Length: 171
Image 1 (tube, one colour):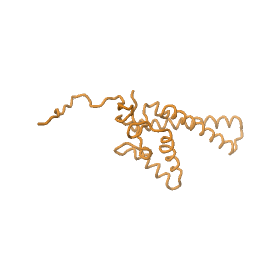
Image 2 (cartoon, rainbow, N blue to C red):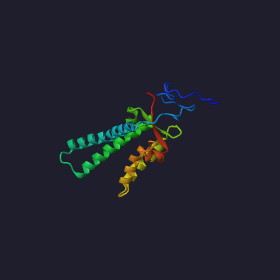
Image 3 (cartoon, rainbow, N blue to C red):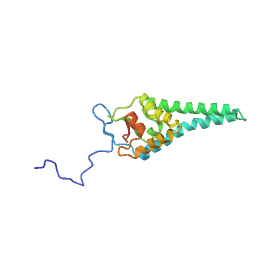
Image 4 (tube, one colour):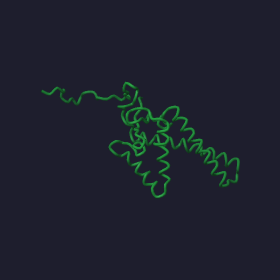
């Protein structure tokens, strides 16, 4: 007396391609973003951080034909601050980075709620970068963070630290 219908290989899929939300508007059951999407978003975000550096260093070279260590470092620092400011503004406004927006993926908490800006900036990004600069330990952490995405949950260490996941957005 089995109450379930028999398995039908020709039945439509149980889930749809749209990003389902629960009653509170959370992305609780959304499909995870692919590793390729996440890598692409990271590369696009790196371009957003590097582009202002190229512009500020170019301007410094045009204004000061004989570069000094001071002008080089100041122009690079100004470019990095500008790039970080752009990313921070976009994350505050949209709840995701430029790369994630282009590739239609989003960071959410494990329960589907949108993470706070502080959670994204400090737990997902700052800790990863800060630990990466620690001598003799940083490279190991950075490798472990990157290779953790190959696990069953497809979550990097910074996702696990921040209790987040990256999902596909509705098309």
